[in-house]
Structures are given as structure tokens and as C-alpha cells.
Amino acid sequence: MPIKHIRAICLDLDDTLWELGPVIEQAERVLQVWFARHWPRVSERYSIPAIRALRQQVAGRFPGQEHDPGLLRRATYAELARDCGYPGSLGEEAFAVFQQARNQVMPYADVHPALPRLARRFPLVALTNGNADLEAIGLHRHFAAVFAAAGLGVAKPDPRAFQAVCERLSLQPAEIAHAGDHPQHDVAGARAAGMTAVWVDRGHHAWPGGLPPAGHVVHDLMELVALVGA
Ligand SMILES: [Mg+2]
Image (cartoon, rainbow, N blue to C red):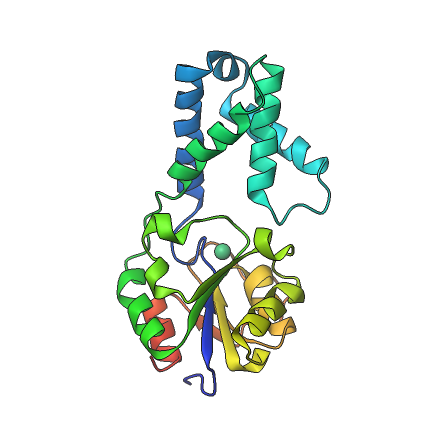
């Protein structure tokens, strides 16, 4: 059944438009090589898993800041620098190296044909808990706006993240379809906010037992194009 009566589409980014895990792993390797070349005490003292563990510790020291992954990474890299006797400003440089690699994503094959069709028919916006840079990735021209949790001060599935999108588009929640891969963050969150929720099942998550089934399920964005009549 096609979805009717919507006036805008809101898309998740990571794991909806591209697979995130391999990109993060590659970015961590790129950063480790960069440390070895320019700041060798960091890579001598800290393996990639050790840096991940430090990031978890740092996150524990920034309660309520989980919506800002960039802040946590910068703080982690600044701490590595201090611990190794390097200037704390290295944190910012390291973050830039990581981000450059983090944006080397490989969109799923359906993304390039689907985005222009969606964007021709509806205002298309993005709502992400991550910090992908659509301009660096080269997909920004399809999007009327990008809302990141770090900028909103609140992350999905908090209904306030979805409400912020409604306010910026001057639309009611029921007039917006939100599509994303995550059962809780995207589907349950959008539904709780009153949006039409679409689960983009890319095979990353089994549907959680306790969660009411998604009303709309697609496996790629061309199925979303069909579902919304774009
Ligand atoms: Mg996602």
C-alpha cells in the first residue's frame, strides 16, 4: 500500500544510505597510520582497541553528551595527546584526519537513483545521530536540510529530535515520513513523535521482540520511492 498524505521525507544516514561499520574501522586504521607517522608515541602506547576503550571511558565522563560523537572523539584524542606528552591541540588535528576518512562512504547502489526521485517529489531532509558530512560525501544537493543530533542537542529516538524537524519544515508530524534502519532510533522514535515511520531493513538489525512491528518496511530506497509514490 503506497503511503499517502505526506508532504516531506526525512532520512536517516548511517546504515541507511551506506554501511557505517567498515568505514569507521577504516577511519580508525587511517588515523593509526597518521599517529605512527606524526605522533609516534600515541600509536606505540595505544592500539586501535585501546583507543576505542578510552573513548568509552571518556563518554562516561560526559554524561548527557552521547548525542555529540564529534565532541567525544575530540576529547578522546586530546587525552591521548596529553597522556603521550604532545600538545592537546593534536586532538583537533586527529579528529580532522578521522572525519576525512569517515566521510569516504560507499552509498548503497539504490541511493544514487533514488535520492533525486525522492527530492523531486518532496522536500527531503536528513536526521542523523552521527556526524557524516553530506557535502564531503557529495550527496548534499538532494537534501533541503540536514539535522544532526549534535546540533539539535538531542538524539533519536527522543521525540524532540523529530519535533525539531517538524518545526523547521513547518509541518505536522503526520505529514512527514521518516525512514531509517534502526528499529528503536528511527522506527519507534518517529512513530512516538507521530510521524509515518518506515523501516529500511538493510539486514543490520533483527526486529526486536518487544517492539510492535513496523507498519512500513522497505529493503532499499527504490522500494521507498515506490512506497511514497515518487
Ligand atoms: Mg542509521
